[in-house]
Structures are given as C-alpha cells and as structure tokens.
Length: 169
Image (cartoon, rainbow, N blue to C red; front, side, top):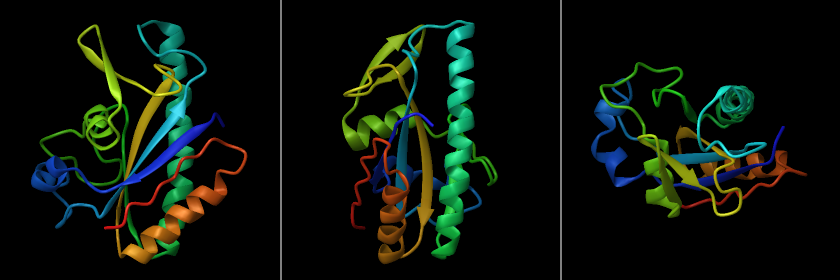
C-alpha cells in the first residue's frame, strides 16, 4: 500500500446544514470525518489511460482501507459510512440529492490549495502536490470511541506516513 495520511476533523458547517440532502438515511450529521489522502505514484493532473489506471489502483486501496476501518468502527460500536471518491455518494447508504465534494472539504478543514484543470478542481497536497487521491469516511459515536478508533488507525499505519489528528467534538 502506498503512503497515506489520515486527518480526523469535525464536520464542516456545510455538511451540518445540508446533511439531509447529502445523507437522507441518517437522522443526524456525522460526529467526525476522516479525510484520507493516498499518495499516487505520480501526478494525477491531466488525463489519459495512465492516470485512469492509477486512480483505479488508488480506488482499490481506498476500498481495502475502509473495510479495515469499518471493522474497527463496528468493534467500538461506532456508526460508519464511506464516501465514494469517484462519485461523491455514500458507499452503503441511500444517496442524497447532493454529492460530497471531497476537495471542498479538504480546503475548508485543512486549508489545502487547489488547481483548476479541464473544468475540475484538484487538490494540491502540501507534500505530494497533485500525486494525491482524496477520500472520506464519516463516523457517528461518542467522543471516547472516536478517539480510540483514531488511535487504532494511527497504530495500524506503522511504517506508513500517517498524520492522524483527533479533534475533540
């Protein structure tokens, strides 16, 4: 698995205000977001077969990673939802009338910069620049369970770049 970073952040104001149209099956907004950035082997700026193959490989890494985190979350009695980086819709829940904008969430919560390319906004990671694949996991639960999960995610990332910060709710 390529290096990745995990940032535990509170939900954005936009997500709190619009959770009904983003997550119609959930009665409340999530308590915590895990923004996960997988490092690509090369820049994802532009288009072409090479970039699409790399995005597909990173999508597979995201799926594997979220399965592990889901198991950890369920063991802590936390509710879990992954957001598809490709579509912006929930992986397991009913999709809403709006999509999650992972780039906007990274900008709002972490201050990442963006680049415009062919009508799309791409994240500019502080270290990996455009060799970055953003993804998102939503969590519901009590503060101690969320903190414990965050620590477990950090411990499982030994040997891999992991910046897993817990923001108390």
